[in-house]
Length: 232
Picture (cartoon, one colour):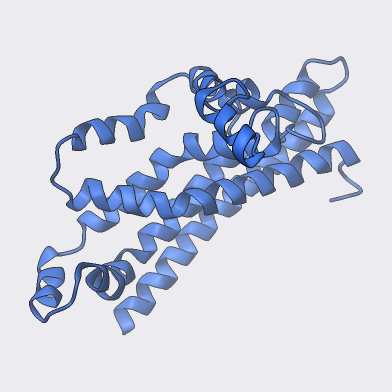
């Protein structure tokens, strides 16, 4: 692939994989907690939380990127604090691309995990609780093994979504080759210059292959985990 793609194209692919992996890994613990709260929790503001989680699916991606820029930019109320106290900068950095991808993929991750949690019979959790198990122990020993296929599916689905994220990313971190230029941004850049169709087509093919591989892997891993759980 390194011979088929130019160095710039390869850097865009590698950066997309890096951004998607970091976005998925960083958001997965929060995805499990939020999905658990929405599936099992009964608290004021639950519907508001549900709406906020799914807001990136409804808003135009450019709007989400703009809100991220206002919040996590160098002059944003969160971004300024992180920069001054911890030296962490998201705007116009690859870490910002990971943040934007995580935000856009988060609703899909939460939905997949939430459906898996809702499919678990609450009586199984109640039976473990009556035997003296605490809530964390019930989750770790009963709920988590049962929802593991949903977690895997949600993580891989989020990874695939992060790979294709464009609008929020280019608004928040721009399109800087070698720094913030992900696969979709590179395709867009090549389409803006004469003679760039061939390069855009190659990268589009790479994106299709990665997306299909992620979906097939999600199905395979989910079924494998489900068979293992059924056999135990």
